Amino acid sequence: MSGLTHFDGKGDAHMVDVSDKEVTSRVAVASGCVKMSAETLEIVVKNSAKKGDVLAVARLAGIMGAKRTADLIPLCHPLPITKVAVELHPDPALPGVRIEATVKTTGQTGVEMEALTAVSVAGLTVYDMLKAVEKGMVLSDIRLVLKEGGKSGRYEAPV
Image 1 (tube, rainbow, N blue to C red):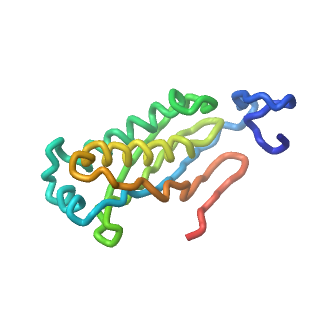
Image 2: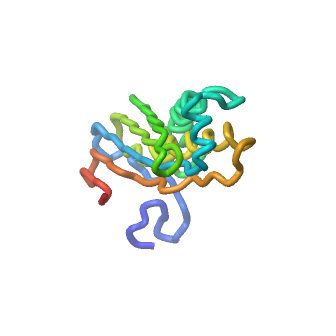
């Protein structure tokens, strides 16, 4: 299990000890999308979904998801998040909604999982709010776009 930090010498899963790591400023950006029909996207754009403002509710859900990541992912550390920004943009070219989340902290471990969770929860919320109209929507392309800070420095996903 060499190189996998969440396993000990016996191969058992464990939470990584970050107590000796330096406290640094950290940021992570993740993105993804919800693909849907043009007709369903029109409901989003016109803000005429029966459950309410799809993009506003999904934005709040994404923020809440980032804050609850340690409750959802078993080996994540609970972190003092200093910023969560979730942006959702209708994209007729998909057609669907593009999602981007930025999460910041000052701490001993990164916020990649929080950014990925924010995108995932926002996407799931878009699905939930529109499922009565279209059950075949697809959440896709959820990935880490950027991370800065910590020992490994900067990572930027290839375009």
